[in-house]
Length: 635
Image (cartoon, rainbow, N blue to C red; front, side):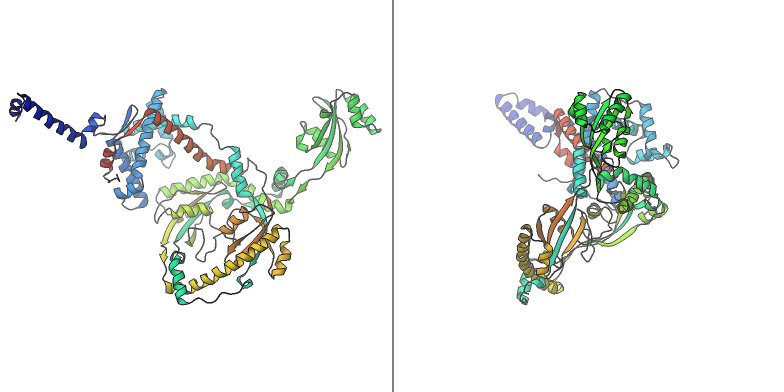
């Protein structure tokens, strides 16, 4: 064959034919993948990241390890197609690309970790420690084998991981959630409103005519989805939080009183204020002489002017006791039972004589007796925080050993709670909100994203606690037949007609409330009862659905609105709105900060890594990616 090619190329016709044939072969190679060679890709390179690369072998190993981990957690086989649909293949690739980019950055910065340092760090990792808290070589070897590494290979991999962590730690070091953000969440969560309302029953409007079967079927056909049976999930929960395990009864009255005195000004009202004038004398003798003149009738401002003091330095205005730089001066001023003059108080700057012109008494919304239960609960929660951490670790250890949630709870002396039927709105089978559901919407969202038999992550509570949960059963949603819901359809039609009529009546009442007419007078005219709900917050409560509460907060204070409820239409007036003073040192504020911090760090790292990858340049071999996972991708 080679001899024939040599002979054919001896004349210009043969050479032309050979050139054409070779051109076709080259184009064919380019179409079928050999062109990757000319573009810098090889069959073993899945992605190029700057001067580094993600190999097909490394990607396939990481993909299979993650797939195996998910299968163990889900307790069932996961196909490549399912993994592809969930985006697992791209998530693994993105992680590996990020690691290569960070490896190059660490190299640029000249970072390094010695074998001794890496071994010391590994020994301190809880994952590699035995029950006695010491490094367990057998456990380390098992984890390395499960990850597809030899012991030496795993050590090398962890050294790179530590270097990457050095880079990312520097990026997020010192980044804390802004106080303004924490305060905004605090205000959103803790704003409370007083709501005056009346419920307009359907009986206030004329009943609609009974619909025919044809009208009922038409109505049902247009709204089939409305008459679906909702999906319900059976949940087992275990709550470990400061509020749940704290013991308010163990807090003494003295501790509660002391705490009340510390926070009453911030939380429950305004402290006493006094209008004060003040002169600082160089010596005690001068102060005594001036005090004598003032008691004899001299004017304080005139004396200050005579002594050539600046009026701004003399007139302190309305001040609280904590406003004084020297506590002894403040104590003397606020010890006066009524306006008058204090004895000279010796300070580092001289002798101080103060005059109290007037006293504005303290005004507190809650007395100690009224606030005592909540203060005891808060103190107990603060004291229980260390115990929460211990219980969390103990329960996690038992869960890691394969115990069920009930067994893990029993092992630490706690009990689980079972909720037989919870829908995706946190309601029970009767449609009523489950007030005792821990972590509220957060738990519901997590539970409906999970499945039966899945080992779930915990859900955080507002006070820094944890909720473990298991999905024990799922009752799927289904479409009900017309015969099943015929009565419900008829009731829905009657209710819809009544609501239209009630809505018109409600608009008229809202307009009268906005014009200043008292809701009590309107209630008498309508023959319904005016009611008041105190301390309404943006959280579940048994007397109002979440939709009604949202409407309460969509209206400005001293304004009115209306909303549909099960038994008619609710017309309301927002009497007032209050928000507790933001305390950045409270348990809730610290918990908010802790919950925000990971998100802030993740956002910052995403931006940093994105910029790093853009600077380095990333090139993906899509054909190699498909081949590595065995999943067909959309083109």
